[in-house]
Image (cartoon, rainbow, N blue to C red; front, side):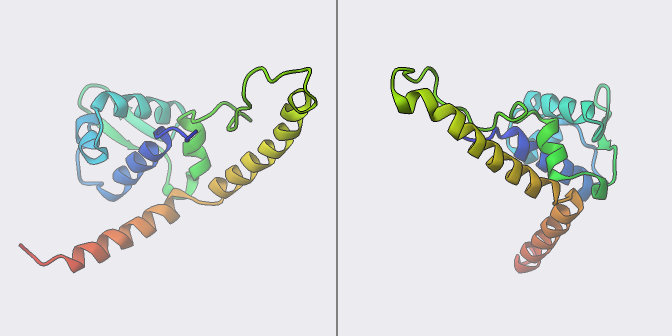
Length: 151
């Protein structure tokens, strides 16, 4: 099982809005950077807007950040795009055999461990702001741009 790509798409969108401030941030323009369909971008933008992380103008008005990068954590993005239902990152297989001692007890034992794992992951996401991520991204872009010869 993987976490939905909506999380990385959401982070990509917010990063674009922060780094490419001079551009007109339409869903088509963002989709070209993300490498996906504009419909997917509009859906994720809608979720980011609902979470009050972006402003979206109707039509081809484009999108802008609604908060500063310092105010947005990766956990905010994770929750905004509804990657998983609350406390349900891990799923236990359906209908284990209740007559089996392992089958009858595996869910309760795993549930405690998976809740701890999810809490730890969310703690890491909460500790990283979009400012930190965008700063690292901007440095990476700068290094790679400097390494390319001018054409």
